[in-house]
Image (tube, rainbow, N blue to C red):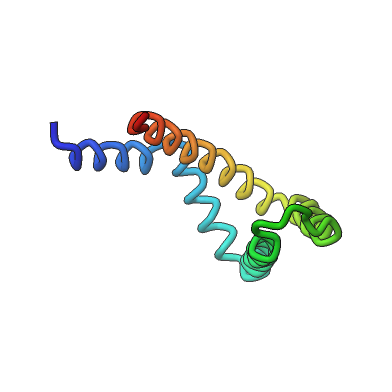
Length: 109
């Protein structure tokens, strides 16, 4: 068994999964519309800024978090963006699950 071959098999399985295909197609569709692309990128920028500013703080900036949640709610009113974000969440969950499986498998007691 070659570990690199197995890694390539896993990558191929991920790439051909329905979840990834849907995410990739919807990503392409949303990014092709300049207005949608700008809204999604602005939202992501605000989320990252919030995370950086609040990293390690015991108390989060609730007012800023509320603004981000309101922005997300507004984005979800756009059907194309909503479908894209939901597909991204489904794919992210698979990606996170795979990472957890790998981490647990190589855990050293």
